[in-house]
Length: 167
Image 1: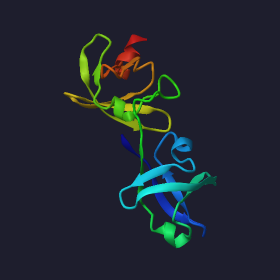
Image 2: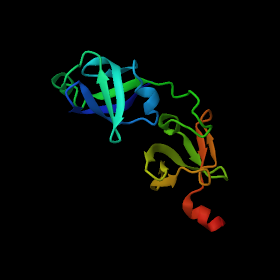
Image 3: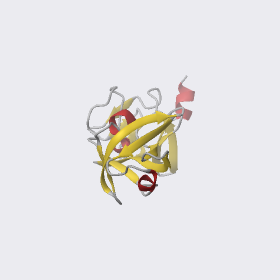
């Protein structure tokens, strides 16, 4: 599956490097030297250099060897072909696209709604679940989402108000 992994920012220096806005949780893997990324505007881009400077990822691309050339790539979105069913580092690693569309059920089996998004926040992720009454957000932690069954397209949730009443 073709997934967005980054956006090229402004040029850095005079040797054809650009800042990268990382949009993947595996930047070391996706932005390794020699990797080929896809872009809508410029086709395939091969990474020729990569380094972190002051906490910002800088990449160089084949055929873009100076500041003027790399500036033409500014705001270009970078895509990578990713197997979303490939096992993650941890057993609790899920890809957002694996979760979207899953039916959310209570422990009793009652249907709550459908997972429509995963909101990434610095502290934790939230599952956005569309219900008949509107959208609810549930922290994506094991205590509140004890079961994730990707094969069955189902998650079991304990909404926070119910979790508080159970303690």
